[in-house]
Image 1: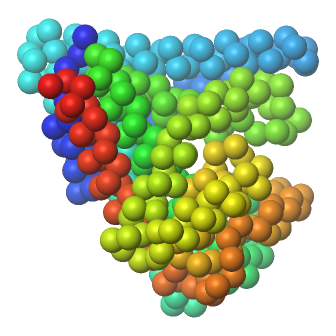
Image 2 (image 1 turned 45 degrees about the vertical axis):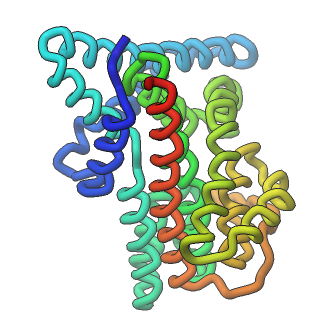
Length: 326
């Protein structure tokens, strides 16, 4: 059992809010290291035969990656904690800090919105290309802003709410930050091999389904946290709930539609349309009502909602962790 309390969770959250993901630590970031592990295991496991065999090998990739990341996080904190309890807890806080991405999400989306506001569209497209999978070279001003807004909305769940949820759950179960790290491994697997491309349609199937499962509860909690945040910040809370319950299921993802629809409803904008991925057009359903234009100010309002949502998620999950451990 590894001690990880509501105070540790708050410390990790505060550390993220203050320094985000500093470039000096990028090579040691658990997500970066996990990506390298996935790439190494993929080379060893991919194989030539397709179909069921490739699905099975993709399942082995998933189990090995998540198992190794969980064991590494648990083992590091446990071993250092046996040497010095305070050192173990400090390392646990640092590992938990790496799981949360409130400030980094704000930074990356904000620079897109600011570049559009200042009519630096080429720069905005370049910044956007770093945070979305779609082609950005020929996007219009509105489409750049839509990509930034959708990124802010979707990642409010898997970059903020879900990590805090799994860190708190891990703390309650005695796993320390290891469950939060395992969640980030699931998320990284989905981003690397979860695509429905020819290469990954079989090999990434287990990772994609696992990501859907791990995000099921956090995505639905996110829509309520967005509505709550809109009561204290920009937007309308009741409209966020209305649009989320009406439009969330239109999204191709079983989870992403909930935060996206909640943000669209709260701020009165319409999302969705045609995206291009490696030259191939893919239509996505329209979500929300086109009440107000999608402007840089709207994207910045979405980021304000995210900061409030992050605080409320901390209070919710930290409070649950405190209650469980008291």
